[in-house]
Length: 301
Length: 301
Image (cartoon, rainbow over all chains, first blue to last red; front, side, top):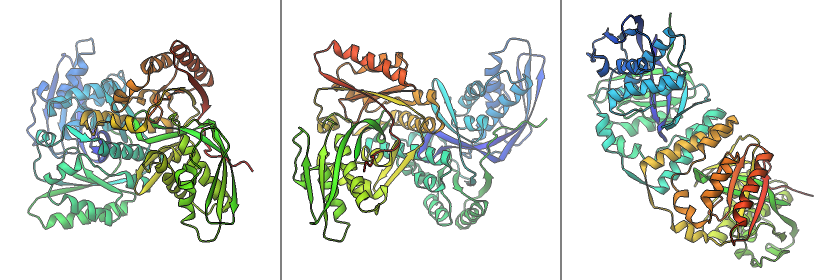
């Protein structure tokens, strides 16, 4: 089982738009066991909890087990490659990978929407909140819009081929801190500009209109308050766009920054731009390059 | 020239989403004249100003004439059927009809986007504001999204066949009053719910997914404060939806209420619902039924 990283809070689409990446991915092996419980085996160095209800994958599977009669459970071996706290959906990869894998063993008894519900219970362990912004694209693949959480309503959007370049500066941003920065109220004028862009972005994605996608990648609400958390944020954005990127912004609640490009070549130039800018700082960083992952979590027998 | 009524502020798409109706329409006849001016001849009983700069069609044409060299102008005979103040784009029909007609005489020298700019100068005469919410669908046809006014960016959306039922209660709502009711700030939570719905509505329109369209027709921001202006508003909405309508809301800034339906049959049942409810009040009303007008302003030679 290969479970991908993902980008949530896609610029104007704060708290609703996300997409899955082809890389990096976590690896997972899952087995049925003869006891109604979940056993977690970590095969990496992140020291994540193995107590199932404190582990994102574990809590997701416990939530699934509650909906099943029968005296069996799951054992999961997890090798994480997506660093926790990077802002590219590390916890979601664990949650989504676990429930998709378990559902394979159960002959696909649950719908994708039900799997998202289970994985949201896992997300709650990581962030204190049942949110679907990352698990939705992991489970549905591609670009998703979470129209509503309660009742859960997820829309898989059409989208044209796009390439993603992501820089992960090795600094820590606590999700709780990033959340505290959000204003509780916003001006109606900014809100209108934001939802006009969300509508335009969805239209651009569905039509495959790259210019429209590019014009719509504006955020008047969240980026202005959060960008100060990420060193060189504006330079990365401006110089990436100069290099041909369609646009981009903060991935999740940061610190990663993602940029979308129409071609692989541009995405590579964006990588050079990012590398140049961050090499001159004292901050360590990783850069990822990826297509948008239309498939989501992938089962490998 | 036949210039249609239109619906702006489509539920969650306040200030950005609108569509053109097949009926009612204004009629217009336009001729070139040998003087750089605009002459307005009203062929109806609405007593609209004939001074061109005070007349919506006149001001739109004056704006166009400013971009043209040459010593000629336009004479327009207008027979309005769309009652001013009804909330279904009466002024926009005048503005859009005039500039599309004039552009025909000029062998289509201006783009649709330029025509919208001229028509917005006409709209300013009626409402004090250069807005494109109604003139955009009149000129582009169908469903449009105004992503931005400055610079002007209009997106023609795909949409599936839909039928519209509109009730126009004969009460007056001053646009300025309706505008004063708008909060200057809104909660971020409501704004997020609103833009999630805008994205979902655009997706539903483009995919032709009626159920998704129906689920997305929710307005958490404007309808809650303005609905009190329109008697029986909630009953109309609730009973129309019970009768099978996809959803609907306030047309423009009211007092008209529009409901969207998938079939003509449902739209007719919605008409019966509206008639039943308003017949029991002391308020006069008109009801219109129409398809969404994919063509917009129509040239009749």
